[in-house]
Amino acid sequence: MDKKKIARVTSFRYQILALIFILLAGGLVLLPKYQKQEGIKSEALLSHATSPERYISTDQIANKIINKDPSFILIDVREEESFKNYSLPNAINIPLAKLFDEESLPYLNQSQFDVVFFSNDHFYADQAWMLCNRRGFKNLRVLNGGLNTWFTTIINPEKPSQDMPAEAFELYATRKASSMYFGVFYPDQQAVAEESISNTPAPKKVITVQKKKKKPVEGGC
Amino acid sequence: MGPLIPNGLIPMEWDSIIAIIIGIAFGFVLEASGFSSSRKLAGVFYGYDFAVLKVFFTAAAVSVIGIYYMDYLGYLDINQLYVHPTYLWAAIIGGIIMGIGFVAGGFCPGTSLCAVAIGKLDAWVYVGGIMIGVFVFSELYSFFEPIYNGYFLGNITLVDSFGWNPYWVIFIFSIIAIVAFVVSDVVRKKVKKVFYS
Amino acid sequence: MKELEKIKRISIASTLFILAVLIGVLTFERPKNMYAFNTENTLETLTTTSYLISMDELDKNNSVLIDVRSQYEYEKGHLENAINMALPEILTEENQLILNDLKDGKTMVVYGKNVQEANMPFLMLYQLGFTNIKLLSVKLDYLQNKLIVSKEEVEKPVSNIQDFINESVKNSKKPIVLEKVKAEPKRVITVQKKKKKPVEGGC
Image 1 (cartoon, each protein chain N blue to C red):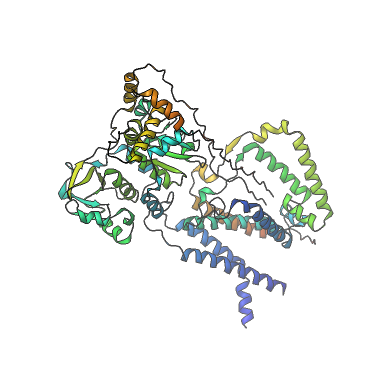
Image 2 (cartoon, rainbow over the protein chains, first blue to last red):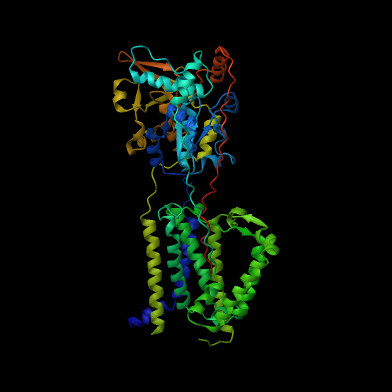
């Protein structure tokens, strides 16, 4: 008796499967749609935003530029006018409004270089950083304090007063030397210039290892 | 979350190994379901066996539904999936050549290798033919190149290029699949049965 | 017998399939704290609207102040009627509840130690869909333990660096040929969208 029942049900098996199939497909149409979440989760973004890891100091950047470190690119997110007036050497101008333009994405969305955003202070740079970070771009940094700090620390470093510790003087000497590298002239140029040459470490060469692009595995029927 | 390899959940170095495992499984299923028989494959064109149509249509429909469910639930990002680039005329001409070969030889390239594995003579001939074809194509590559690399349309999909709603497309697609199955059953009943091993 | 075997297989396969779908649906958890805007919308709003307000423009009756500094700093001194919501905690459930209550009412005004600090929570909350949010352009300092609120302008260059450099060149006694630091522009090898190349399958 039981076997007969099962047999009767199973004789409809293809119809049943077809019905399930249609139902699942129809389910897709009927499911409530919600806007797709772009980029990384908000919790992850927040924890990235909370951490100060993204900041890179002006001294570090100056050091890197002087040593011709090839591992980073500088992105100036200010307007074009300010960029033309002054910018860091070799910086690329991507005004904040054009951050996601077709031509700027290759600079931002790559894994080869560190991307260092900067603006006058780090307000716009942070915004650019956050939006790019949300999109999942890698190796993003922000110049802490931006060009204003760049000016006060590197271009026009404050002379330490007599009662300051020796480190302050050392720091001042390096900063002064780097400011000369970036084109600032001091009245006592000659003496310091010679000194600075011996001070600056020889440019180190960084050979970036390029990841081998895997050849496509072609298949086919 | 997914796709697993592009998102780094499975290291990229594993992809060849995974490919081999999937390939073995694929070959096994092909052989186990009798697709290494050229008569079964050619049956679609003569109307006495629609297993090929049913299997591949079902596979496509089920996987597209599965993928869209996974995308909906956030297990998979559909935008990261690989879309095969379209070379319009190369695809059309290649499709015609493959279709003719399919009807004439009774194999598609994958199943021919399956049949070679179980030692079918006609499959050996078929694979030999493929090799000759490959050789001729490579020798004449400079002549074919404009078609091979031309008419490039990019990684396009029907859904993107026509702006259709993918969910409705899938729904209609599955209805078409069901209708095709029913029709193929009707046709098969009308056509004289052919027995083959 | 063979028929029965086939039926068995089909039913097992379909059960497993349905099970997989069901598990997928049941374990699905709607992510919390969903973004309401994508990055492009946000960028457009950032660059086209003015989201900064100064202390003078602040309409005290019609806005809620949100202090994003740490609780310690908040307790040390804060603006009148401000709610404390430290940056790492803005996504917690209770804070989201508070924020959601404010969503359609008064203007939310975020402030921190300086504008830069409040920038991140502001942007975060905006992307989550709190459109009635503003950023207070103030800077908080302490003078003998008293909170000093001063106005701060964002992205204002302190001085014209190029002029400064030119000036210094002019002032230097010896006319030295200016060696312009000019390294070769870096070539960026664009990583094509990692559409990891074809692992195609066929038939």
